[in-house]
Each structure stands twice: as structure tokens, then as C-alpha cells.
Length: 438
Image 1 (cartoon, rainbow, N blue to C red):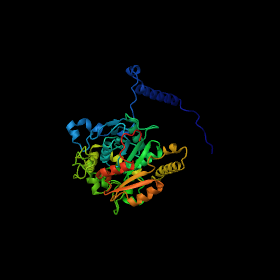
Image 2: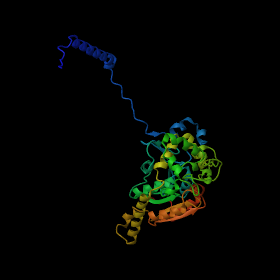
Image 3: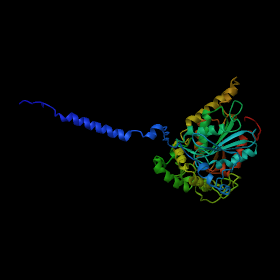
Image 4: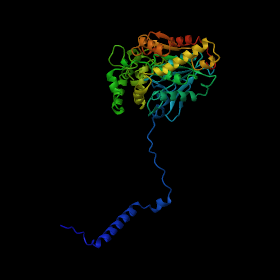
């Protein structure tokens, strides 16, 4: 059997294809040609497709809509401390307060995971009254600071400290100028990390109930799983927990319990944040539902810690995100390597001093003025296990650490601010305000 190819292609096929192609091109031209007006007009600028990089703080979303009287009635009034400023940055604005004698010892205080800087207001006021120049900041996503849409890890928190320092009208850094760092809870972990990488900037390191070395067994399995959820599923849960009080929201379980938080206990939730507003507790600051208790800041006796946190949940859209990211990424545990860096420098400082080495002064600039770190804890703190902290901090700091305790829980800097101030001045060798660069 044989096969034959077609003898000829129908003569009408090329003409049909040509006409079809011509029609298609004509339609494309009609629908895509520029109009006369657009041909002579300049092109429109491209619309920005960049997503937002931060969530604005109540400075932008709330305060512009309030009267002076309404601002003053807030659990956290924006003028509660002197020297308020909002530092603009690519990460959003950062709230900073700075006051005290310009020639006094410079002290930067860094608060914990749930409340704004109000929690350290009593200590800051006590130090300023004794001649220190103090600086408080609201960490990202707390108080009047924006929430950057980035992991809240030591790198981001270091940026906050550097922005605050750079924004001061005074010089806080330089060869002849250093400052003391005081960190509470999460802020303790932040300050230890900062000192590990900027040793020549820090003259003294004081940690109050610090995070950073919390052991793994203190994190419950349930909370580990909870904080592994995606943000869209986790945020409603965290908001509910925060409304019940800050003690329920984070991932560290208190002593003798199967669940709980980094800031656990009735004493913490009921602690008064400011002596000037004694009706505002820690819980009120987050959820506006707590009875008054003790007083951390005399400027606002209605402000307690819980009430300040309650205010954050209601008024700061970025607070839950910052809280969640801090639990996941912040220096709460596993920071042994950075603490060892501090300890190694302190050992080198002591060795150089003891042998009278010619470079002892230079080595000391990488250490600390007192040659050790001060750690202050509450004896009944359900979160920071004192015995574990003593063992672990002594090891990583190579013995260059002094411990003091107060009769309090995790709220120790709020309810025992006067005692803590006394410990600080003793550590510094007495009230010596007016010493430049100390």
C-alpha cells in the first residue's frame, strides 16, 4: 500500500490567514493606541506599592483626637515625665524622656516586656532627685513608641537604645563620656546584650529581675505550642490574656505552676505605676480593670502597672504584635554567649589592674567601672528563680557579679523602688551627683 501527499493546497487558505491576522492586529491597535490627550500629557507617577513598615503609636492615632483634659486623664499621660520627645526614624517614632542635672551621672533605664517605661519611673525619679541625669524610653510597640514590622530581637532593641542616645541634646557617648545601664526583666536581657557589643559606652550595668538566662524547663509545652501559631491566630489569644492581666500572657511558667508568664502574680498586676495616680495598676494600664495597689511613680498616682498595660491593649494597635515578637525573638533565654562576653572583659579588666599593666586603663574601658554587675531580685519572684539566676549568672559572668534582694515578687522595681535606688547608690559608692562622664 502507498500513501500520496496532497497534490495542492487550496488557493483560498493563504488569503484567509492573511485577512485574519490583519483583523487581529487592527483590533489590538484600536484598544491599545494612546489617546491624543495622553500622548501629549506627561506620564502619571507610579503608585507606591511599598507595604507599611511599622504600625504608628498612639502619638499619631490617639493623642491628636483628645483634649488636654482627656490626655491628662489617660492611665499613661504623655507628659507624665519631664523632657518628653518623639524620635522619628525609619522604624517609626520612639518615645524618650530625659531629665535631671546636665552634669549628673548619666543613666539609661530599659523596661520589661508588657508595660511602658512607667514601670521604672520610681527608680528614675529617685536617681534624678539625687543628682543623676536619667533617660527613659518606651520600647518598640509599648507606650508611645511605634511597632516596627520586624522581629523584635536584640538587633532591633539595640537600635532603639542607639536612637535614644543619639537624640539627646547632651553627649552620652565618646571617649570621656559613658553612661550606666539599668534593665528590668526583658530590659535586663536587652542591656546585657547591649553591653556585650558596646562595652566602651557603658560604665555600669545593673540588672533587675533580668531575663536572658531563664532555663528551658521554665517554658511550658502548651505556651511553646501557642507561640508557634501564626500571628493571625495568636493575636486574639494574646489580647484576651493581656486583658486578664499581664501575668497571663507570656511563655514562662511561674514557680510551681504549669502555665503562666514572664511577669506573673497578683502583686505584679496590682502594682501602682505612679504615685501621682494611685488608682491605676499594671493591669489597668493594659485592660483598665484593677484595684489600686503600691506606687512606682509619684508623678501620676492613678497609674498602676496593670492599668497602663490595659491602656496599651486598647490604644496601641501594634502592642500585641510587639509582645508576641518579643516572646519569640527577644533576649528572654539562651543569651549565655553575650553574658560571657561581658564576663570575659571583666576578667581581663581585673587581671590588668592586678598586674599593673600599662594598658590597664584601656582594658578598663572594655569593662565596667565597678568591675562587676549588680543584680537585684525579688525574693518571692515566681518568674526569675533566684537560685538558678545566681548559679547561671555567676558562671557566665565569671564571678564578677553582686546580688541583692528585696521582699517582693517580679514587680520589685515598682513596689520597692526606694530600696532599689539605695542598692544602686551603694553599688556606685555613694551619692556623687555632678560627676561628668561617670
